[in-house]
Image (cartoon, rainbow, N blue to C red):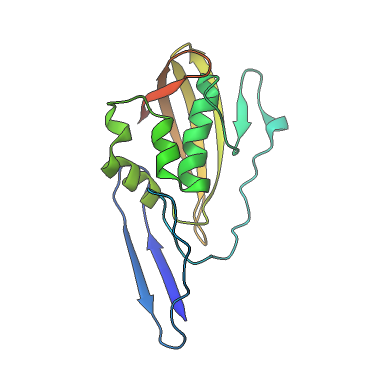
Length: 170
């Protein structure tokens, strides 16, 4: 039987992934995953962080679901869902404007590593300008404590082609 141990940190802080065997039956076979995605054995489900859209203050959006490219809030939501829930590097890159450092392979890999498989999260977002989204990302890795991060995302584009230019701590 195989045991998976994931140690990570948020976003740009690099983590390491290690897999150790305990003997017994051979490792399970995995289907080929799409390019840029990570295949791992299933982990026990983490109880989701409370993320109730009805708790949003006026002008605030609360979500942990996939977003879209129709709005600044939608593309920020889609990026975080792609990294934390779907663990889909290609989808995360599509949410980022071309030639932006945030979309490079090392930074996408660091973001994936920063949120261990099975992490749960909630976004509380507020668009403060056409190109600015302020957000609080609350996350909890499997078996870990809850941590919140205050972030500012810059975006550009038109509905249907909104993209993130960058995201920084605030």
